[in-house]
Image 1 (tube, rainbow, N blue to C red):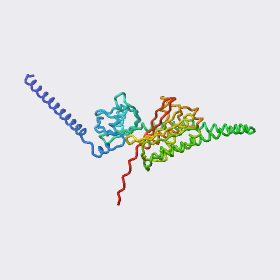
Image 2: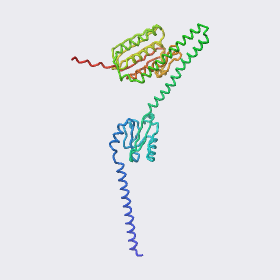
Image 3: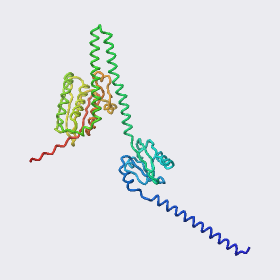
Image 4: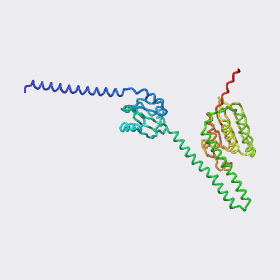
Length: 382
């Protein structure tokens, strides 16, 4: 074959290959433009507005699993890093939902923050398709909910244990009285002990009702304005008989008058509990001080005793339900371990706090700190 034919065939083959390459490049470019158009298409305004007002954390992802929108809640939970999800478990769930098209709910433990290891939160995450092009991830923080559920379980277990003691004692004493019916002295002794256990059971029941009421209601919803002096006077008066029995003087000292806002009954109960504890745990013929002062708009009611004091390792636990520093002494005094827990909840429900200073053998000072109520504006004369 003539060499010119080879040249012609080579030119035709080169033209065909070039034409095919150009066509393929054109198809690829067209496909790329389509993908870019889909990826760059804006999220509908309604979806963006919805995500930003969600109470739970919300994240929207595109078809390549890139984060294109995240709510302030998602940022607070540290769910997103750049344009990716931080949690591998959530990312895996997103891929499964893309594949199946069905929404999925998972519970995960998520480490929020990266400084010092961060802290763990319990999240319930729902992953669902958002149309054909987006994926929605919703995350609700259940950490506090699960903690409170644990507290409730512990509370039920504690109260069951605590109620068994006086009820069991009453049963044993009743049997002892029946067996010793012919011995008046023993019957009187057992009857006195039954009275003590019945009194303790009654106090525990009352304090449980008080504690439940404090936790169920918000005293600031229907708040009253009342003077702190009246609170102190009533609380001291309610402990006068107990103090006189131990020859203990209760010395109130109000350095500055102020008003409080909330429930007068509950705040009185809290101060009464503090004074009662101070009297019960103080030696005979000593004194208990009740001081009031106002500092930077905070009313401080401090109750000081000269009792045995509380060790450092015990101070964090004295506000727990049913916790007693000295269980043996509590049985003698009839303490239920609920008084300081009530004080703590009253303080929290009124926007305040309870603090403790104590040293073994030197006594203790419990300080109830509550916001002072601003003076009402004077009424204009007609």
